[in-house]
Image (cartoon, rainbow, N blue to C red; front, side):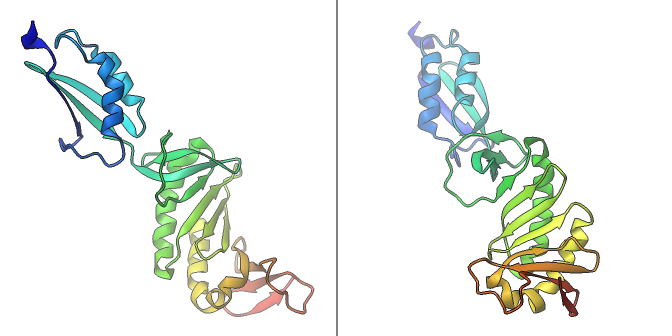
Length: 230
């Protein structure tokens, strides 16, 4: 009966707004259209749902039939939190709950180099680390969690910060305390800062920076001021 032919398809987000942050409404419409034609009562809701969820950025989709002739698609989108790096290459995006998904995104995101099983832990630690570094106006560009439960991060000033696997928050606090007076003046020349010592930390100059007369290329610094080379 013509009265029960589909007259309109609407696409909204979880809050009922017709604005989507990342997903393309046109792509969603094109993907579900073959399954939502003909009689209002005969549309293939399950296949339409599957088609919508195969579209980039769509985490979940719900298809509702609203009499007499409206199809409503409610879309839940992924929220990007990081890029997943695997063997040196981007393997996908990581959502705010640790789920890996595939989508194109040009915005700024930190890179997570770690096993997919550890993404939730990495997200939790990233938030803690970032909050602690905020006072120094430093950001984490890449966070690495090794198979040996060791934490390393690349900061936006070019320094690689090595925290190891034990007492990582205490070690980060020592870095934050030492950075303004000891490390910041030479930050542009530093390759890494290794905090894996009980009462000291080691630094190394970048390879493209002229080395001092000493043959040692790294220096171990007892916090806060006493220094000795190794």
